[in-house]
Length: 509
Image (tube, rainbow, N blue to C red):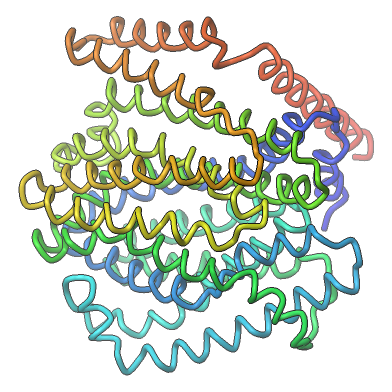
């Protein structure tokens, strides 16, 4: 790695301000840059795809990614969450090496076993999702399964070592090469849905190699049953949770596929594309938040952990509520720009999915805190409720409202689970302040009512609504002076350090 790269890798670690909020912002920025670039490149790629593939072909691609995600979730053993928690729980480098290598060996074994089992039953598995896989796509299932499983696990390991900038770089690598090869295989070579898969496979391979190289332990074949037993004991309840998460997060796609066909799947997939990308930006926050709050809880710093939790839910709620407001105001314009007028029918579902995202990301933050405090069995209980409400809601709403019904069912399932997360945290004497994250949601609701009543069409009234939302958030202390000070301090520190690095590089030249 170059001298410049090494200096930039040290950049984030040298701008310590001491507060939990600053650490959270610092890590999120370093990870989020990669997620943001992935989102931008991904959206441009979607613009190309929606203009060069039919809705049916796009639906076929979505189907194969859903099948692969299903296989990843049912075979993860909760290792993606338990691994970073155990890495942060010890400072012994030998133990960390044993932990990482044992988990990697075990995961590789499970990937091979699941692939061998899944191949003979590929038609039946695909049948669970509404329609059969295209014959030419079946061969890619084991390969995509291996790549997606491995990437998820390696990113989890990097979280445990607090190497957030490496996660950001790996995301940028995946996003850049995926974007590049979409242009090559879909636009130039006209390979259609197979070209989309080629682009995904190549980009994941390159990113995976970088992450494997970045894990700071000596990689070797070693297996320690005692280490695996402890990790699986914590992770097994999370495995159940992973399966339930897949069901409630993808049951809408399954039911739409059965009732509306591949074209309906494509319209809904376009509607959820921007919320999904924003969810990936949230992953930058999650990558930092989970090991940080786990470290606090494992160190018995419960008061500081509660402070971090409440600040996090407040800020997540504000940012996502602002995004939902922008979607309500500018959704149609955005879809014409990104996806063409062909997908304007997706806009209502998109707006409600953005509203659901507000509650979903707050709930995800609460759920991670439940796991961090040591209750790895509780998320499964929460997601049973979520799954039941989502399934019932989809069966009721989709026949009546189409893809909008799927979005409303998603919102209903998320809202139903929020009180449970709060209850489980309070049982562990964690001071969860619900009003902190409810305020941005209520402010959004008030401004949504204004939009509904006044129906602003031109640009200026829409901008005034956004300004009103921001000013109300400041007045009601949703955004505080401490938030702005921490953000500006981190941005200033990083900018100054970046300038120093660039100057030293110029002098060396």
